[in-house]
Image 1 (spheres, rainbow, N blue to C red):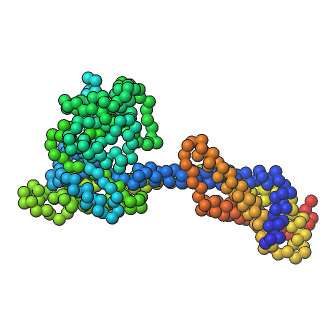
Image 2 (tube, helix red, strand yellow):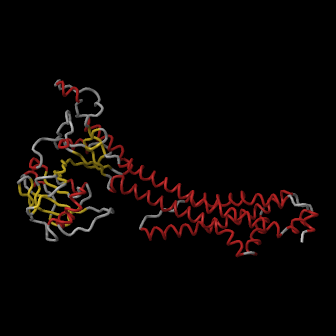
Image 3 (cartoon, one colour):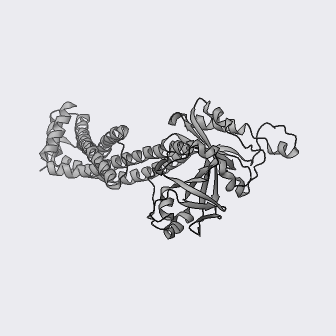
Amino acid sequence: MLENIRISFQGIFGHKMRSLLTMLGIIIGIAAIIAIVSTIKGTNEQIKENLIGTGDNTLKITTRQNGYEVSPGEGADMTGVPVYDASILEKLKELDSVTDACMYHQKMTYQGVYCRDSELQGVQMIGTDPKYLAINGYRIIRGRGLVEEDQTQYRNVMILDRETAYCLFEGEDAVNQTIEVQGVPFTVIGVMDKEDDGFEPVVTSLSDYQTYYESENRSVMVIPDSVWPVVSTFDEPYQFIVKAKDTETMSTAAREAEDLLNAGIKSRSSSQMGTGEEVEGLENGQVKYKSEDTLEKAKELQKLANSTKSQLIWIAGISLLVGGIGVMNIMLVSVTERTREIGLKKALGARRKVILGQFLTEASVLTSLGGIIGVGAGIGLAYFIGKLAEVPVAVSGWSIVISVAFSMVIGILFGLIPSIKASRLDPIEALRYE
């Protein structure tokens, strides 16, 4: 075997240009596969980091019906859903997988919000406690955040997101400006921002705000929970945000928090009967607390990415097929060129399996060398694409091993016919060959 490998390298380096051109299809195919796998794997890791816990291990638990998030203002039947008080937060924080929690009201408001005599549409109003911003990863970039006194003293104060503040006041400092909500003036005390890798349109005026933010429901206004009755005149269930200990415990945290919150919901039938007795289990279609399934979102996007990866790998595999055909062609040429050598070896007693092994080894070494070069080229190509397209790259060790092994298999498969042809040559006819 070692002797066959030595002879193979002699043949490869004896015809450098021919060998390089023969390996080119293998190199391109392997490089394409390595680059595809590395960029898709890096993208999947980014999906996991961005979606699972939005990077800070938090998840929302909201009232949902038939899988869709609902609120009282949307006509959902909230029968049996309790209006929890702050004591529920302590119970949530006692869960083993939860480190912190907050509760909030949220409502999309389409009328009654005015800024400088202009009515704003599609404003997302949030009534909450001072913890909300920190748990959700917001930071105050101007002014201050909510404090406990804002809650206890029923202050009409408000925090805006950065884009909304800039648009509504057209570059002026938003702090201490006034926004009217249902006829009640609220003073802007702060401007918040959150890291977001998504697309953000360029907005510089109230007109831009109306074009982009009102149509997309992007605007966020945060007020103290104690003054929420200004926005909603009736009691409605809270929504919750819980923070898990780490990414691995998020599913457990979601399940435990859901069970705790849903334990207080009475079945719709028992509530309608007026018995006050809780019937075991909630009915289908009844509103209940459910976490947003970020893990499933990540899985769906990763599944889509992996599907795309499979298709691209099959396309790249075509170049491997072309490379294999090139190997077969050059090996047939090699058999023809070395016909007298084969005849001499057979005349001296070399068996068919020896000739077969020699040419199979030469084909395998040729494609394996091409595979190794392709791996290096693929890694370089992956990082080049990653930098050019600004996507993460994660080089997969198993893809490197499989690629090199696959290139060797290509050599064996496509080198088999020329090797069999060489082993079956008649020694007398071979020695007569000119």
